[in-house]
Image 1 (tube, helix red, strand yellow):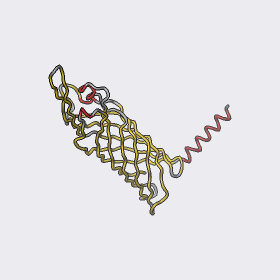
Image 2 (cartoon, rainbow, N blue to C red):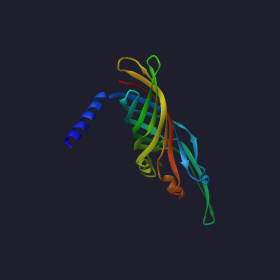
Image 3 (tube, rainbow, N blue to C red):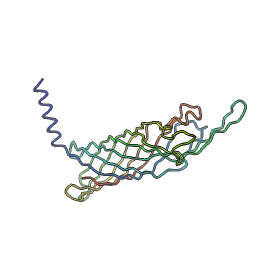
Image 4 (cartoon, helix red, strand yellow):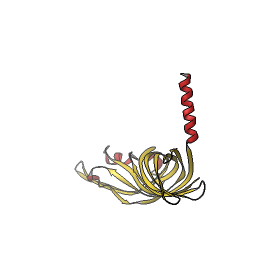
Length: 222
C-alpha cells in the first residue's frame, strides 16, 4: 500500500512538472438575449438584444501539447429587453396582463472548459476550439434600470445560481517568448431558469426564462 501511494505521488508530481499554466486577462463584449419556455398564449418576445460587458482572469492548464483545461473568474452582465401580453377570463371579466422589462443581471462566472489547439496555421498563429460550461453566481440585478421596485430589491427577484454551456473558437498570436494575444467568439447558452417572477405573475409554473449570448473574447496571456 505504501509503495502504491508513493507511486501515485511520483506520477502526480511528474504530471505537474510537465504541465504548463498560462494566465491571462480577458475582455468580452457580449450581445446578450433571452429565450423563453412558455406557451404561445403568453406572447413572450425578445424586444431587442443588449450589449453587455464581461471581464476577468482566465487560466489555461496544459496537460498535453495541444490540450488544456481552461477556467478562470469573470464578471459578466446578461439579460435583454423582453415583453409579454396575456389575456384571460377571470370571473366573467376579461383581464390583460402585459409588460415590457429590460433585464440586467450581473454574474461572477467560473468556466469549466476544454480547449483544443491546432499546430501553427500561420507563423506564430494557432487556432483553438473551446467546449464546456460555466457555473455562475448572481451579484447584482436591475429591471428597467431600477434596483428597487415597489419597496422590493430587484436582486431578490432572480435566482442565485445559473449554469450555461460554452462553445467557441478563435486564434492565438505569439507576441514574444511568453506573451500571447488572443481573439475569438463564444456562444453562451443558459441551461437554468433565471427567475420565478413570471411564473408567479402569470400563475404558470412551467414558464422559464434563460440567458443566451454571443461574446467577442479578446485578451492577453502571459
